[in-house]
Length: 149
Image (cartoon, rainbow, N blue to C red; front, top):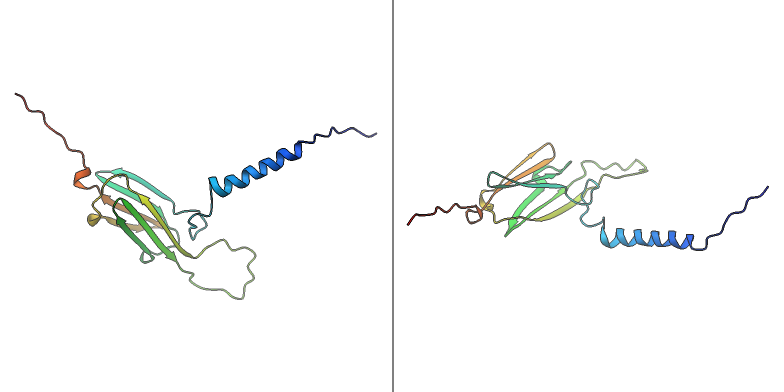
């Protein structure tokens, strides 16, 4: 026995529209190929917070050596750039899939306040770069005492 299947002429158009929406969203709204990090991410992952009159920035840099990272502050912009180098090249192997990347990366981060770049400190431990930049004296909150008349 045969069954009847109802034909819906617009069902294919809706799936085509969904596919086009995804294409435009991935290409223009949320592009994934901005700054490609050597470890496969789209950007250098950072955390930024303020503690004890310092701006603290932590960046995940797995597989990168501290001597291959450059940090600079220009105005209110912190720039972290670096390079990963392949330690050994294997020519005999036939790769089926290779997702580890080698090359350079860069990320510029606007800082929320004026900073004193001359007194900045950086530490590197277990693939995490920690940068502490003190706030500028002008940016620190000042208390004003009220005088009595």
